[in-house]
Amino acid sequence: MKKWEGYQKGVNLGGWLSQCDDTEETYSSFIVEKDIETIAGWGMDHVRLPFDYELIEDKEGNPVESGYGHIQDAIDWCGKYGLNLILDLHKTMGYSFDDAHGEAGFFESEKLQQRFYALWERVAERFGKYEERVAFELLNEVTDKSYCDLWNEISYECIRRIRKISPTIRILVGGYWNNSVDSVKDLAMPYDENIIYNFHCYEPLIFTHQGAPWIPTMDTSFRIRIDAPYGEMEEAGVKNLQQVTTGFKGFAPEDTLSAEYFENIFAEAVSVAQERDVALYCGEYGVIDRVDPVDVVKWFSMINQVFRKYGIGRSAWNYKRMDFGISDVRMDAVREELIRYL
Image 1 (cartoon, rainbow, N blue to C red):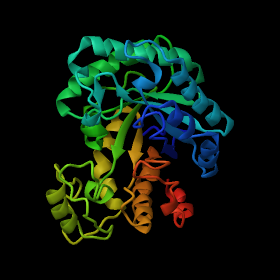
Image 2: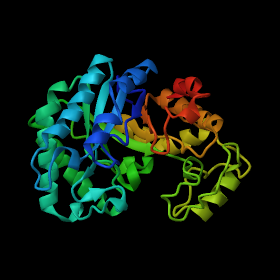
Image 3: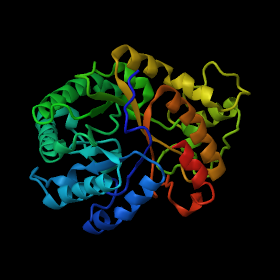
Image 4: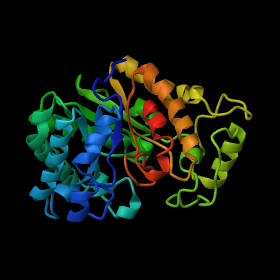
């Protein structure tokens, strides 16, 4: 299987240019050059930068120069400190992974799809020249499986248009169910040799998202330890999640979480990537801040055994705040150990 060199150990900059209040104050202060220096000091080789369409275009689709300027800052800072960067479009007009953002209609509207293509053409024109240290991620977390075939068509067309401007820049494509690893098999065949298959992993979700208030069915007071047996995790998942926690098939109810669990849930995607000669990348993975930091470290150590074994690049969610912050004060006592597993 291909290994994506230069993108093996990363961290997300969520909450800066995406999932924020969209004010110039946040854009100018949430992440600054010192943060990029800190990330480089952790031994990371790249960052993933989520950004929303509102950052770089107005309601009519015209470019917003100040927004492009913030992306340029990120590129310049990363260049200064030797980090590569992924530009991740977290929200496009008409679509967001989060229904609360009120975006709708993208998959049903050719007009919105054309606007999506135009956005990426402008991004390629601006930043394609940095292809040695910048990559493009077309869209964050398609949700509904019913969009699969259409998304494959849209992503192909978007890549075709980008290729007229940036013939060899690396482009990441993820699938349905919020970039589930189970969707990798249904991604379109790689457009060319510079395509990366992207997935996210927050499994077991009942552990990594315990108490999460944005999950409607979750008891926000619910807590579970990492050494809880699978049977207990599965039962808690049924009570607190809309979907059953995956990956427990083949394990005994008394078994506990280990690297073998991640071997199991990654196996199909690894096989597909090997068959198609494409690199795998995990764009998001992490544990909510309601979990004991010691247990957080244990989870990262397990999943990263498998990432390293197969050469899967990855970017932890999240550098700062956003309910997952690695740089937050609560992680001070374990951070030195934790960053060894990123």
